[in-house]
Amino acid sequence: MEIDSNFDEKIMTLIAGVVPGKFKKTKITLESHLQKELGLDSIGVLALVFQLEESFGIDITETGVAIDIAKLKTVGDIVNAGREILSHVPVSK
Image 1 (tube, rainbow, N blue to C red):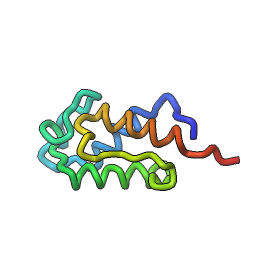
Image 2 (cartoon, one colour; image 1 turned 180 degrees about the vertical axis):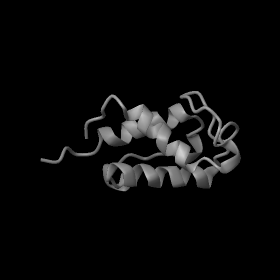
Image 3 (spheres, rainbow, N blue to C red; image 1 turned 60 degrees about the horizontal axis):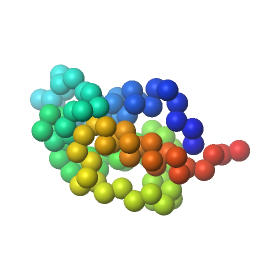
Image 4 (cartoon, rainbow, N blue to C red; image 1 turned 90 degrees about the vertical axis):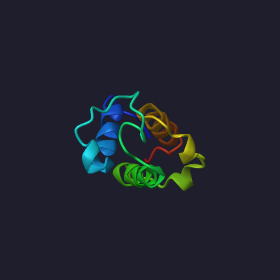
């Protein structure tokens, strides 16, 4: 699957959608820490992964990419994981 120029922005929009209420006004950057700055615990990160699958119409398990959710600490980590996952999605004809 091809990654377009708006990919980072799409991921940040997905993240904004799962950020808990009291963190909604926090500016999201690639350096933003998921838990400390955005209030996302491991369940929140998992919800984000499901949102990523739904938004891009993929099943991560089918890509063969292993993502360790515990290692996803920043928005940049999520973006990089998303790029890794999408680079392994077969191009549909």
